Length: 125
Image 1 (tube, rainbow, N blue to C red):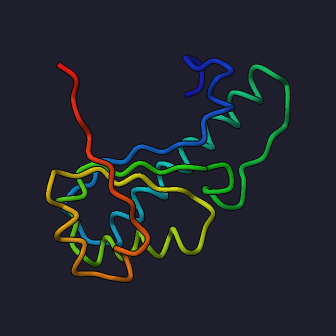
Image 2 (cartoon, rainbow, N blue to C red):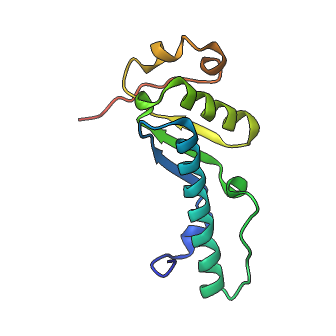
Protein backbone atom coordinates (compact mmCIF):
# COMPACT_ATOMS: atom_id res chain seq x y z
CA UNK A 1 0.00 0.00 0.00
CA UNK A 2 1.31 3.45 -0.87
CA UNK A 3 3.61 2.32 -3.70
CA UNK A 4 1.35 3.56 -6.51
CA UNK A 5 0.85 6.93 -4.86
CA UNK A 6 2.59 10.20 -5.54
CA UNK A 7 3.01 13.30 -3.40
CA UNK A 8 -0.47 14.59 -4.28
CA UNK A 9 -1.86 12.18 -1.67
CA UNK A 10 -0.46 14.45 1.05
CA UNK A 11 -2.84 17.22 -0.04
CA UNK A 12 -5.89 14.98 -0.12
CA UNK A 13 -8.47 16.11 2.42
CA UNK A 14 -11.72 14.80 0.93
CA UNK A 15 -13.56 11.53 1.45
CA UNK A 16 -16.11 10.27 -1.09
CA UNK A 17 -18.65 7.84 0.31
CA UNK A 18 -21.47 6.11 -1.56
CA UNK A 19 -24.19 5.54 0.98
CA UNK A 20 -25.40 1.96 1.24
CA UNK A 21 -28.74 1.05 2.77
CA UNK A 22 -27.28 0.00 6.14
CA UNK A 23 -27.64 0.82 9.82
CA UNK A 24 -26.36 4.22 10.94
CA UNK A 25 -23.63 2.63 13.07
CA UNK A 26 -22.35 0.69 10.06
CA UNK A 27 -22.32 3.82 7.91
CA UNK A 28 -20.30 5.76 10.48
CA UNK A 29 -17.91 2.83 10.81
CA UNK A 30 -17.44 2.76 7.03
CA UNK A 31 -16.66 6.50 6.95
CA UNK A 32 -14.28 6.03 9.88
CA UNK A 33 -12.46 3.23 8.02
CA UNK A 34 -12.15 5.40 4.88
CA UNK A 35 -10.56 8.18 6.92
CA UNK A 36 -8.13 5.80 8.60
CA UNK A 37 -7.15 4.26 5.25
CA UNK A 38 -6.41 7.69 3.79
CA UNK A 39 -4.24 8.58 6.79
CA UNK A 40 -2.46 5.23 6.57
CA UNK A 41 -1.56 5.77 2.91
CA UNK A 42 -0.25 9.27 3.71
CA UNK A 43 1.93 8.00 6.57
CA UNK A 44 3.29 5.11 4.51
CA UNK A 45 4.09 7.49 1.65
CA UNK A 46 5.97 9.86 3.98
CA UNK A 47 7.94 7.01 5.55
CA UNK A 48 8.90 5.37 2.25
CA UNK A 49 9.44 8.41 0.06
CA UNK A 50 10.36 11.26 2.37
CA UNK A 51 12.17 9.37 5.15
CA UNK A 52 9.85 10.92 7.72
CA UNK A 53 8.81 8.99 10.78
CA UNK A 54 5.24 10.17 10.74
CA UNK A 55 2.79 8.68 13.19
CA UNK A 56 -0.86 8.06 12.60
CA UNK A 57 -3.12 10.88 13.79
CA UNK A 58 -5.22 10.18 16.87
CA UNK A 59 -8.40 11.00 14.98
CA UNK A 60 -9.02 10.12 11.34
CA UNK A 61 -10.78 13.42 10.68
CA UNK A 62 -7.88 15.72 11.65
CA UNK A 63 -6.87 16.27 8.02
CA UNK A 64 -10.31 15.94 6.43
CA UNK A 65 -11.99 19.12 5.17
CA UNK A 66 -14.83 17.63 3.14
CA UNK A 67 -16.94 14.49 3.02
CA UNK A 68 -19.03 13.88 -0.10
CA UNK A 69 -21.92 11.47 0.46
CA UNK A 70 -23.59 10.13 -2.67
CA UNK A 71 -26.91 8.28 -2.88
CA UNK A 72 -28.40 9.90 0.22
CA UNK A 73 -31.79 8.75 -1.02
CA UNK A 74 -30.85 5.34 0.39
CA UNK A 75 -30.32 6.68 3.89
CA UNK A 76 -32.84 6.50 6.69
CA UNK A 77 -33.39 9.44 8.99
CA UNK A 78 -31.13 7.89 11.63
CA UNK A 79 -28.27 7.86 9.09
CA UNK A 80 -28.88 11.49 8.17
CA UNK A 81 -28.98 12.39 11.85
CA UNK A 82 -25.57 10.76 12.30
CA UNK A 83 -24.18 12.87 9.44
CA UNK A 84 -25.71 16.00 11.00
CA UNK A 85 -24.11 15.13 14.33
CA UNK A 86 -20.73 14.60 12.66
CA UNK A 87 -21.09 17.97 10.96
CA UNK A 88 -22.00 19.68 14.25
CA UNK A 89 -19.10 18.14 16.18
CA UNK A 90 -16.36 18.61 13.61
CA UNK A 91 -15.05 21.22 11.25
CA UNK A 92 -15.84 19.09 8.21
CA UNK A 93 -17.93 20.37 5.32
CA UNK A 94 -20.34 17.94 3.69
CA UNK A 95 -21.84 17.62 0.25
CA UNK A 96 -24.90 15.39 0.10
CA UNK A 97 -25.85 14.10 -3.34
CA UNK A 98 -29.30 12.71 -4.06
CA UNK A 99 -32.02 12.46 -6.64
CA UNK A 100 -34.28 15.42 -7.44
CA UNK A 101 -36.97 15.73 -4.81
CA UNK A 102 -34.77 14.78 -1.87
CA UNK A 103 -35.20 18.30 -0.51
CA UNK A 104 -38.92 17.61 0.04
CA UNK A 105 -38.10 14.54 2.12
CA UNK A 106 -35.49 16.41 4.14
CA UNK A 107 -37.83 19.36 4.74
CA UNK A 108 -39.71 17.18 7.25
CA UNK A 109 -36.64 17.31 9.52
CA UNK A 110 -36.08 20.98 10.41
CA UNK A 111 -32.96 20.40 12.53
CA UNK A 112 -31.22 18.86 9.52
CA UNK A 113 -32.93 20.92 6.82
CA UNK A 114 -31.82 24.22 8.37
CA UNK A 115 -28.18 23.26 7.77
CA UNK A 116 -28.59 22.32 4.11
CA UNK A 117 -28.39 24.41 0.97
CA UNK A 118 -29.70 22.95 -2.27
CA UNK A 119 -28.10 23.33 -5.68
CA UNK A 120 -29.67 21.47 -8.58
CA UNK A 121 -27.28 19.78 -10.95
CA UNK A 122 -27.90 20.65 -14.55
CA UNK A 123 -26.13 18.38 -16.98
CA UNK A 124 -24.76 20.00 -20.11
CA UNK A 125 -25.35 17.75 -23.07
